[in-house]
Length: 204
Image (cartoon, rainbow, N blue to C red; front, side, top):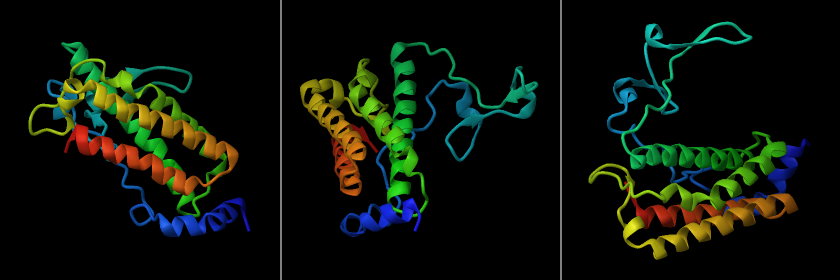
């Protein structure tokens, strides 16, 4: 029995109690739509949410592996700090979601990847530690569009309770992985804080 199967077998009881969205974590940090005013907004978008341009418009890059065209435009210069911060926040949240989903794929299937669990858990803890910095600028989503609600800046002390709770829980999960503890339930507990914060502070 390989290491992956041993891990899954050891977590079987907990996994039965906490089946996260039928084995695929429905983590509540989806990537938002492109920003208004972003030239990439009118371009095609791939399955990862990256805008891309036609090959003849690709930026040409050179290096040791030859010349290659980059069809994924970099973020443009934003007119305001709030616009830039919104883009940075969305991308950071997308990264956080990616680490979370990578962990869940390992824990809730026989996909393998145990050797990377700590890397992903530490990344979650690092992003969680600084998550409040992503909201330094007032940058609420326009009414009717997905994104941050004005309540984040209107009730900063209450919002800080949510970010502090997520920060503490993500650090706790990283330690759980390090100790070889109950990772499935730990992931469930971490997910709770994501869902709770989005329920109160995110426009869906």
